[in-house]
Length: 64
Image 1 (cartoon, one colour):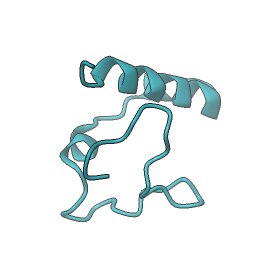
Image 2 (spheres, rainbow, N blue to C red):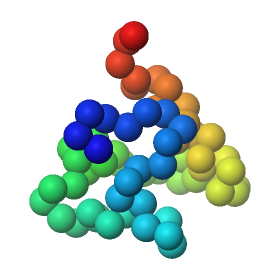
Image 3 (cartoon, rainbow, N blue to C red):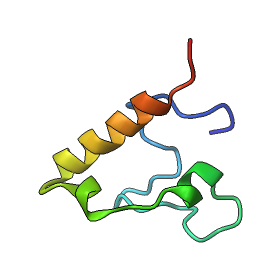
């Protein structure tokens, strides 16, 4: 997504099985490469993990 990804919108590189199509490839965005996942990011469910990611997106969105 050349102009960034809005919060709440799935990445265009997300495969149907929820894996990244660019994982391990040189064209993978720096923000994704730099993300260092931790156990607390996952929570106890997929919904908790997605809530955590939504929070990251909101906290790092460009000022409007």
